[in-house]
Length: 217
Ligand code: DX5
Ligand code: ZN
Image 1 (spheres, rainbow, N blue to C red):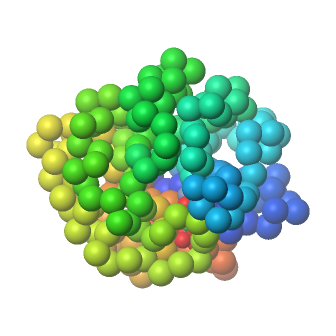
Image 2: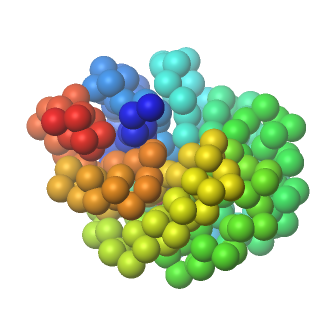
């Protein structure tokens, strides 16, 4: 299966989110990445479940919701009701990961576990039995348009080995600083789902960008 591309709305024009979601669909991407920030887990604030709910009728694409929030457990139901498909939350958040994973499953969504650049791969190993995917942050969470931190690809390689050996069905998503020039390196390191904010929304030809991110052109 080819690598999945999940453009992040963080780099979109917030005054025209409907058109921006359509742009993602028309470009042939696989998912819509929705970055939720609470001003606590990360300094910035973006949007929450009500905005996601309004966008839900616009597309059938997978809604890939990335929770950068301190207390994910309290909000899982809201995001599930709003139409989330994948829900990623951070292993560094304050809630018990097992409880959050169970809640996501109970709400009929797909649990992914995210880890920030400074968090070692070891931190997610105890949860691999319970989740459907990992999300390795390749920049510090909190804002778009940053440069990929090369050392994070070592973690991608390490986790890819582990998944290939013991959990081949898990997705390994990567998020942050992924560009048309470095996507092939990220894929070679073992990622099979790439988030791209700036690289997608600043591209002259978004469909071409999706193909190049996948390594098809
Ligand atoms: C960063 C977000 C990313 C970000 C990616 O905290 O989680 O999803 O929007 O944007 P780019 O691709 O511009 O780094
Ligand atoms: Zn994200």
